[in-house]
Length: 332
Length: 280
Image (cartoon, rainbow over all chains, first blue to last red; front, side, top):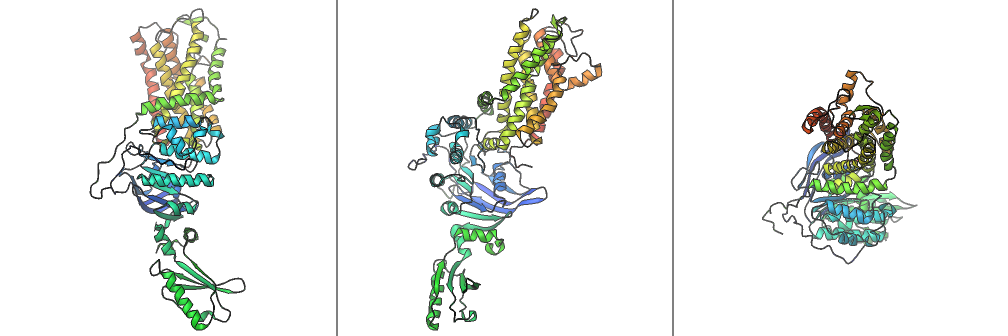
């Protein structure tokens, strides 16, 4: 996969309006009596990447399948370019593409035949050479798809989705099965798509991927969105954590109560550990104020805060908390 | 980027579904050739046609014996074997491996995908028909088909009916192996009802009328009529030679049965076909 090649100007018309390309409003999806998606809403604007994260079975793929036009909503609505995408009607289908969670390639065709077929079926496609170079499969043109590795098939999936120059692209775990190099190259391509104004919906189990690429994200759990917002908003809601080993001569009750911080004392390995979680106040400054207050308190009491740690939230922390069922708490 | 003006929605040139159908047909032919088990569907009609040659050759109509008439009936239902067998098999396999879903999300309409498989069934049915008709032409009383247009029309309509029937089987099964088994039942019933492997003259009139409402018999009779120029619809007994117009007039009920089946099967496919293995 090339690392220097940039995506050339597609020549295809781009939505320049600030209106969202994708709008999902209070979407519910049921399989029989079982409700898989329980009222989710989001929008994706041109040039924006919306990350849809969640545990297995959270309803991510069902949501994407609704946007792809394979399912009608049980209730609520989805709109792509202002239209109902059910059945992938003309006017929508030329402008949208996707990388599915599974591969979906014809194993008995060669790479070249696969790309040529996709090109001949498309409205304003890239050339085969450009597509194969983008995803680093130029050397594999004569190889049968069934002989490709899992990662190479994933690259071909991505290539086929890029080939039609989509203005909206749904990427359902696009880097699963790729090696580290393939993943980094894919991230670069996705970033370039965003720069060109493509609206991207990404689901992934690699949180680093979402942290790098998502402008906004939602974490789903059991059909509901637990947390939604920009990465900064999501992390800010989780809070900063300041922890230290409780000095042996200090009873728990003597620990200071600090404004905007919650205290929790846990039984560690033969010692107690105190953790202050700071959620209030300026995101950039709140950890500093809490640490300063704690150091002042320690100085006044002539004690030492051993194993002092200050930790901002990672997406993984938030994800795990949502997955643990604390969604209601997190969305406050 | 302007925040104040909303430009007219961008449009893309649309690719005609016919062009997509023809392009998919090309790939379907390549895949059919590479997919070795598909060749079985080509061998089967030839095998049945060969068996028909063992039947008596005493002339029944237009100098053609029972054997030749059966071979012509078989020509009408070559697409039954290929359509039901191959279409059900590959569409189930492709649904399960997400090939259909990927093609749909990349903007290919369903009608082009169905058209592609009808295209390959029609192509190979026509090729095999040429072989079987060639055999009949090589018989002592053989000659060039009297109405080649009706012959091709019969094969085309049969290809559409039986491919759609194959596609209609796919929602009932979970994998390609099950699809082959599920398709075998209607395939055998319709083969016996076609007059291609057993003469249907032994059937009582009412039974023959009912069998005539199934698509196999009309497809076979259209080929017999197209080849012989006789109005063999309803049985060769008493059939007379017809003008081109007279033959098409006599063919109307059979054509109507096939078109009716296409309409019904299209509705069934539109309503029940699943693109996605997860669709319930």
